[in-house]
Amino acid sequence: MGMHVNSALPDPAQIKEELPLAPELKALKAKRDAEIRDVFTGVSNRFLVIVGPCSADNEDAVCEYTSRLGELAREVSDKLLIIPRIYTNKPRTTGEGYKGMLHQPNPEAAPDLSAGIQAIRHMHIRSMAESGLTAADEMLYPENRSYLDDILSYEAVGARSVENQQHRLTASGMDIPVGMKNPTSGDLSVMLNSIVAAQHGHNFIYRTHDVTTDGNPLAHAILRGGVDKYGTTHPNYHYEDCIRLWKMYGEKGLANPAVVVDANHSNSGKQHKEQIRIVGEVLHNRNYNEDLRTLIKGVMVESYLMEGRQDITEHMEYGKSITDPCLGWYDTVSLIYHIAEKC
Image 1: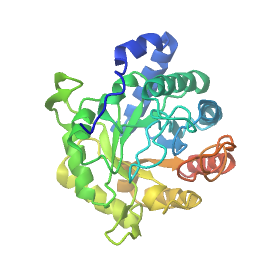
Image 2 (image 1 turned 30 degrees about the vertical axis):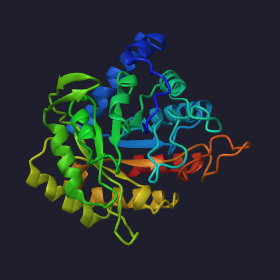
Image 3 (image 1 turned 45 degrees about the vertical axis):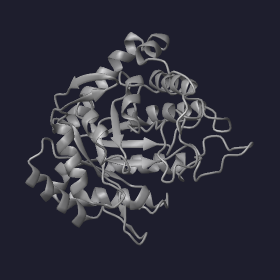
Image 4 (image 1 turned 180 degrees about the horizontal axis):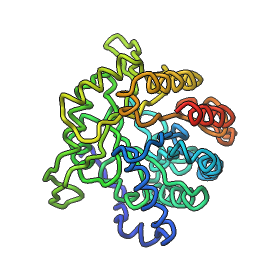
């Protein structure tokens, strides 16, 4: 056989018993979930900023980052609702490279999924306690979200996963906002079909159970740019792109039309400094067109303590990305103040 069983992984209920969520953190999540829901349903005019490292690779660095972010979030809370990116699963185009803390709690060591499950839960809980913020993560493996489903306030389905049936159906059973990214091809119709699927109820197999879901009215779009068959990058955050999406949403008749613009990836060509300019254009477009003010609920930005990226070595720089390049902390602070001023 080509597949070999290494070990049985712990049940989510077991992990939650070993690393429980304290009552005050349960209350924090309920409060934050309600605030974020109000943004997507139009009750609140606050603007979402989903911001943090490309991949959460070091607990101390991530928690220092989110603690700083928590202080900043309180300063701009009248205008902005900040959600830390704590992405513990890293999709890889070819399957090669660092796959995130779930796989490798220590980036320099061999994969250890059992330890990884405990590490990501511990980090998320510590971040909540120290920052006062609940976070976003990517749903790379639908069945693994059960280890964090009592913690997260936002989840994203990535460009390589958005066409997958299990991701779509799992999203339909979630009670928090789930952002469906356009696929790497940039095809908006594929993304919208995923939102349709996520907003409707389904019957399917989940973690060995026969389940039925109610549908998730908070499922929405994330624009992240695309790449054509020649490898050319095509951004999709411009005015015309957002107007097109607004019209396509209207044709589908979906609940709570919304988009979060991912300022990095194929929108920036992974030129991390471009995120500052891109966010500025998105804010200008919202202020120019009332329909886009209604549609564009937030932005997604990759940033960390230190600017840029680095390879995995024995002597890595603390708080610097080991995957895609990120904005540094000082640029992040300036950008968040700018967003608060312009939104």
